[in-house]
Image (cartoon, rainbow, N blue to C red; front, top):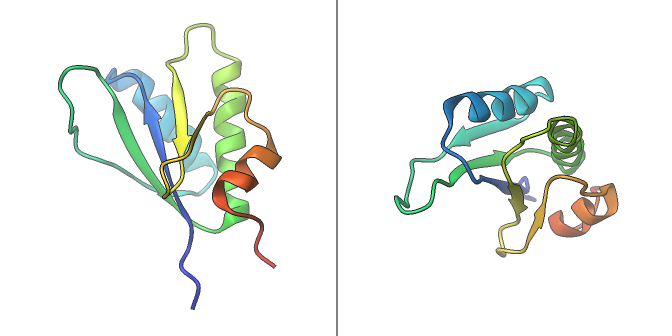
Length: 106
């Protein structure tokens, strides 16, 4: 049995309004996510764990990328895979995301 892939979104902000906008974008794509408890105090980074099918994850992160690109002062947001590889969300391509996740399900 194959496990669903998971990604982590790292938002360089702890601003509740910024986080609400990002979570609303993920919710709009029907992604399962959980905001993780803060582990660092020095720099404000909020981690959001995502899980789901490859296609859903790709579409959700691309939708988030579009939303961030349309804002003037969006926080820096990166997406990480389970191996710790990461890419900036803003401007990410479908191919880059598929490679980060590990391919498309058959």
